[in-house]
Length: 238
Image (cartoon, rainbow, N blue to C red; front, side, top):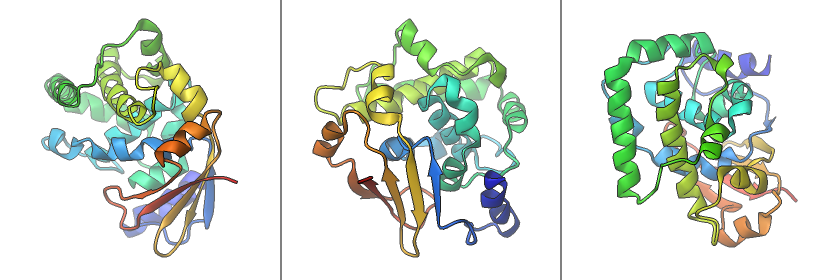
């Protein structure tokens, strides 16, 4: 009901939800730590020839899928449906698992291969190693019931690695950490998003290694993302 309420008004008006609750809680609070890396990906350029799926732009749809993978494969369904992620990425309720699968089939193998090449070229430019250990591959793999073909899962996994590795480089001493370690100690937290007239405020729960995040300034920062006119201010919960 919450997802429908938050995205339904936007579908009807074509604009951000204005009558949404003043604050909404999400179990995927770690997304606020990796949103800058996710937003920095030149997906608009990579997906220029792609059709848009129902309820979203092509770039927003891929960002949602990558964010869901970053949440951990077993949590992908909840992350995909998450009201806060959809609010941030401006994704409507029409973008369902069924329409997502149909859209990827429509995109086809040539576009999939081109996206894989672009992601790997970006990784080389950023000096990020996107070769995964088998355990890490399982950590990011989408569950079988997601219905996404293995080739697509692999491409989305490469992009998710790029996001997580660039995030990890900001953490002193943790640039080579396994994804399970990053999730457990930094990303597996809840958050509350509050809409204010001039900004969005994310108050994120403190993960086990909060002090490391605090040293980098990640828990007291502000940034802009595509499509959102207001800055997002991120703070640690008291």
